Amino acid sequence: MAVRQKSHLFYQSHNRRPVLDQARGIYMWDVDGERYLDGSSGAMVCNIGHSNENVLQAMRRQMEKSTFGYRLHFETEPAELLASKVAALSPEGLDKVFFVSGGSEAVESAIKLARQYALASDQPKRWKVISRYPSYHGCTLGALALTGFTSLSKPFDPMMRVMPKIPAPTAYLDGLDPDIPETGYHYADMLEQCILEEGPESVLAFIVEPVGGASTGALVPPAGYMERIREICTRYNILLIHDEVMTGGGRTGRFFAGEHWGVSPDILVLSKGFSAGYVPLGAMIAHNDIVDAVMAGGGFLHGFTYAGNPLACAAGLAVIEQIEAQDLLKNAETVGAILKHRLTGLMARYPFIGDVRGIGLLLAFELVSDRNTMQPLPKELSAFDRLVDIAYSNGLIIYSRRTRGGLEGDHFLVCPPMITTAEQVEEIMIMLIRSLDTFAAEAQVPIER
Image (cartoon, rainbow, N blue to C red; front, side, top):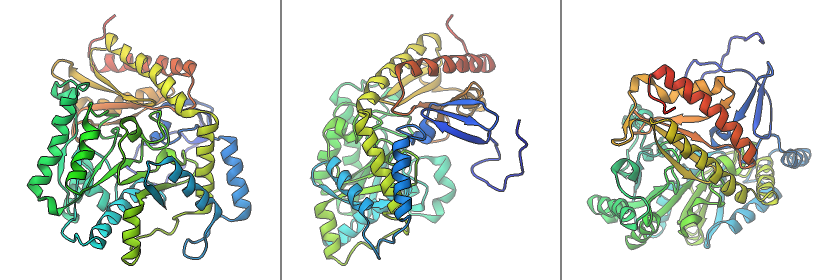
């Protein structure tokens, strides 16, 4: 084993991991030659797999021309080409693109654009952005004010203006049928109730993940939910923001997850799989009318140094080209269905798996003490940490969070790259079953033999 030097880095904890040597496709190797299957695409980022040679070539070509061109000094061909491509992929009317370097920046940009639009359209009283609990929208203070994840947000509450929240549509916890529109209407109508309580004239926007990310573990909205949300926002002249930071880029089998319901937002944000981990890149895409009003009112009072970086945009364009050339949207849909079927099959063996959910290759399963009541496992088991560590020791990388607002509950995202094959799904399952068996023995929870 390689000698470990003292690290001067710090992140969330003092935990050390092996040193990464190289990554190819859906696999990664450390400097000791141990192989890991990237079953979560990093943090649901590496959509097209690691070290795609076509993307690397596109980056090399751009590096030989320029690696930086400040947006106030130059227009660049990669930024213009990528913006045109993104606009073409976006819902009708969402034709203006603002590049950023990550998801938090994209969300921050969206809420600031929404506020400037309210001012430009003579609606100065509108400033509240409603979101959901649980939810995750980013770690900057503006995005964190929208985030419904208590363990991450509570320490910073005094530093920000916390925004109103409505419950996420957790039908599986509430004993409701997610396949009937009445369930969707039940949760969506909570938005209207919140708007009326806050005062419609004060509400600026509602932000929603079409399919839940890390905070709710691939939560799919009930039938009728997304359509009713759109209707309510339109009725009260409130902007609808789709947070597609995790879903944008094809992971659910559509380039944007909102396409599953045929619903168009007023503003859309994406990152993560947008550049698939090759460079930091994200985008905000807004309706023409919003941008035109803001620009006519004096311009968008916002910006980042690396916005529209030519190297990042060249990589982003190459990623989309690979998604299209390899028909990865179809593969995400097809292989995702196989993986979801296999994950659902685990419920027969493991009574402590209470739910399996998701679309395409954005999938998750949740552990519980009792499948009938959906009570979570005891917090002291720290299942969300322990199962990840066990899987890691077996060569499988998965991603976890605490389901109930970050305070308790345990869900695990299984989201391999969109290039994953049916045969590789079987590899994932072998390692996952081995890991669940070990966890069950440690935690003394039952297995059906």
